[in-house]
Image (cartoon, rainbow, N blue to C red):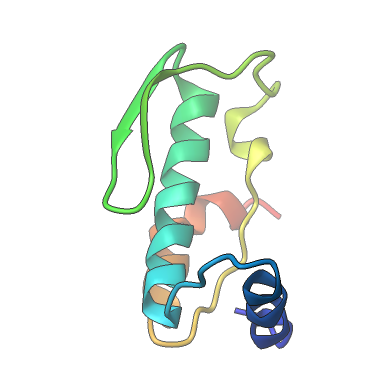
Length: 94
């Protein structure tokens, strides 16, 4: 999360959109990372997540290196290094 997160929530509410609690935002980030990685690595990708779902989705053109499509340096409050360590192969190459 960034220091801009509370301000973004206010912007969402100003347009009548709902916001998620911090725990759900972190869970959504983790699901989004899994979806992006799957789309970059497979011709068709399905993901039955709790917050995000996709079925037989494709991404074209694919990046030259699937890992290069997503470089994430994460230290998420509440999840700490757990989320970052799950994707350490993406940033150990930097």
